[in-house]
Image (tube, rainbow, N blue to C red; front, side, top):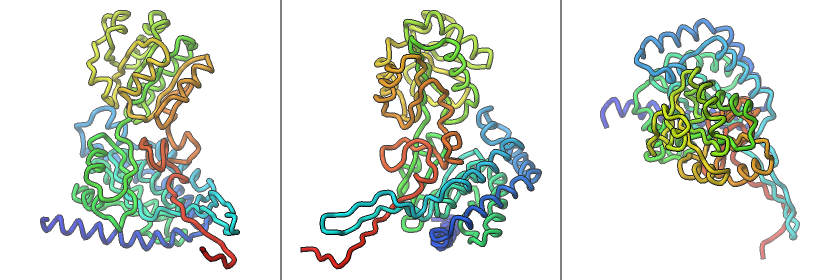
Amino acid sequence: MTALGDEIARMLEDAARQAREAAHALSVAPRPQKDLALTAAAAALRARMPALLDANAADLEAAPALSDAFRDRLTLTEPRIEAMARGLEEVAALPDPVGRVLAEWTRPNGLRIRRVAQPIGVVGMIYESRPNVTADAAALCLKAGSAVILRGGSESLRSALAIHACLLEGLRQAGLPEAAITVAPTADRGFVAAMLRAAGLIDLIVPRGGKGLVTRVMEEARVPVLAHAEGLCHTYIHEAADHGVARCIVANAKMRRTGICGATETLLIDAAIAPALLPAIITDLRALGCRFRADARARAILPDLDPAREEDFRTEWLDAVLNVAVVDGVDAALAHIRRFGSEHTEAIVTQDEAVAMHFLDRLGSAVGMWNTSTQFCDGFEFGFGAEIGIATGRMHARGPVGLEQLCTYRYQVIGNGQLRP
């Protein structure tokens, strides 16, 4: 390891050790103290809005060669800063998840056993360009009693540090240790490597970003990881769909914000209604700037659509590009999703409740939706106040990860002198 690598490793180790001490303080902090830290940080975000916008403008200026979707993710605006502040206040208003009795029972020998929620400890958050993740992740970890080490993308470092200053103001006002929320002071990739090797110091790594980032974390981490690889989300229009509702949902699911993981990447439409409805949907989306990759059956209806390759259906575009396929009913749609999807979020549009429940019951994905936009897959929209990310694995947490999912548990066993025979 180089001298710089040694220095970065020591920087991470020092931060992690201080975070572990802070995590102990957070684990026993009463709810009012944690809530004060969050509401004071929200006030600081509003008070320092001009400084936040200046820091973000410097980030944008320093990284000019960005796609429109990437620039959108990186950009802070007054409404987005206000949304961050509201998110902190909403997390403060939620019940404290720490210490909840999750289950309780009595054994035949009289032993009483309780399963009780407790903090994870120290969370390492590795994310890319979206600065608001700094505030969202910090708020959820703090309320869930865990310290957090945040390493954002190099493009958003100035924005992340400006947001961090507001979070520190909240911690100071509440009398909580500042090491409870740490932002990596360097954009050097060696800091990420040091986090991934920090077994015993960091208890959980949460990556939030593109496939390359998540793949690297999954391959290199010696710390447990909570992640999703891609957001290959599908919207399926069943033959019993209301055409007007379907058009509005697809436009929102694809084009509201194309660069988020809950954006629909593939439209599936029943063959029975495709000739009548698909041209209208394409016209709607074209007017919004969308481009298309279509299978042969869709191109038979609209020959001017660009042909889709098989790999297109496995591509998370994060851009104004939509895959289109015509299918023969709900089971064919489910088969397509199983073949190409990433188990993130899928939606069905139909007026037939039986078909909708057939679709939802047979999905393997973390989130299934009926007659609404896949872009609702979001912790804020789920009522979690914010989210630290979306999980698509099969262990611990799935879908938007909020306060409850950021807790583990322990057992308490209460006896009155029982001895094991």
